[in-house]
Length: 256
Image (cartoon, rainbow, N blue to C red; front, side, top):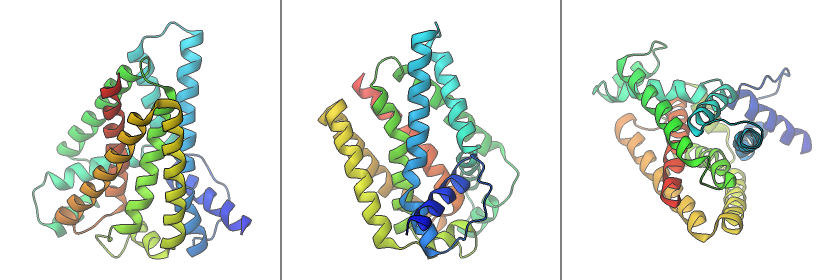
């Protein structure tokens, strides 16, 4: 059991981060289930990283909030290797092509980036820098650090309940292997832990806002994917992570 848990954690870093994992790991039902169950740990490491960097810079250097936000955005990109940004760009190209579902999925599979994908990418990156610049000196570091964790809880939940848009592809393969009951129980535990931590440190208003925004955004995104793509793909899941992070950090602006 412990071995499968460790293998699942290593898979989470292998497929959802740029951290090198120099080990051949079986990709079977127990390992994939553990991977999705432990996926929030990837977000926890990201949140911890940006919190530590923010605290350290504010106590050792005279750096403006915009410069710090740019550095944090770069670190987030470096941690994931741009995986989710790539999905966001492909999603932008596919959706704004205004083609039918099959053509959109075909465009999404094209490795080249188009004008709409580039525009969506620029908007997301610049938006994240601006929002973080507003937050880093005004909001609890825990609230900022919670965002990558919550977005990956949502990613696991979305992978459980959203149907795959196509039968091939890595995301569809993973979805077929997930043990739903085990992963859902793990996501409930993660959600409860995050809710209690936010409640204790940031207050009930912030905790409740995280809960409501995450639920509403995830349900809305699932319906949008079903309508426009017939389900989810790896690119759409990546776009979800980037979008959810921007939405949750943007939500925190209301508490400044």
